[in-house]
Amino acid sequence: MLDVFVEGVVQAGHTAEVADLHAEGFDPRFTAEDHAHFWGGPRPAEAAREAARVDAADAIVLVFPVYWWSFPALLKGWIDRVFTSGWAYSVDAESNTRGHLSAKPVMLIGTGGTRPTTYAKYGYGDAMRTQIDVGIFGFCGMTDVETHLLLNADGDANAERRAGYLVDARALGAGLVAPDRIPKRVQHGAVRLSA
Image (cartoon, rainbow, N blue to C red; front, side, top):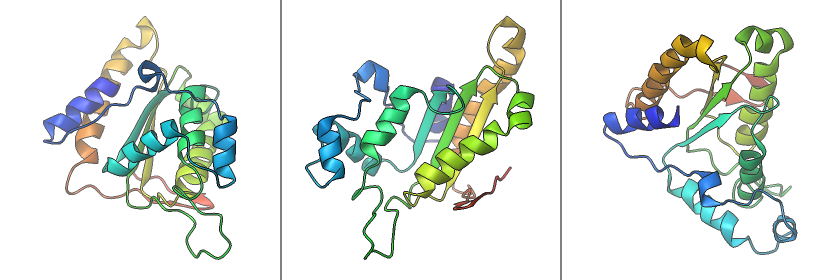
């Protein structure tokens, strides 16, 4: 999914930097140094480097397998360590603005082995959007957030569906950077999905 998404971005005349957290050896553990930063200490070098990547990007795209209706631990740890107070958001009672990252569109592409009917039956998609789109990115001021869950694509029996998802991922890559793209708006307390 990631490869064809990037192909779509490049075919549309843009560039993409891929950050493979696993290959790069990113440490997702929230350390004593991270805890000290939360209370006003210096930012750990690894978290500062990742924040600089986010600052340099025009858009943020997270492609991930869905684990237990959320991010896998490595990606969640990246969010925990990088999207920190003072940079991504403010908890200062004096401030009129909570989120600091409002200018960047965010696209989430999650792949999962469960059927869409299971997500619908138990509300997992809505729960993920509330937790991630609103609870993380909305809290940080990022209101242009769209989520795509590409489900039930594992195994030989789903080869045709998976092939369709690859076409979709390429189109998502081209569409994210399209000049006529309409921002997807996420608001606190409600999640509005656009087709």
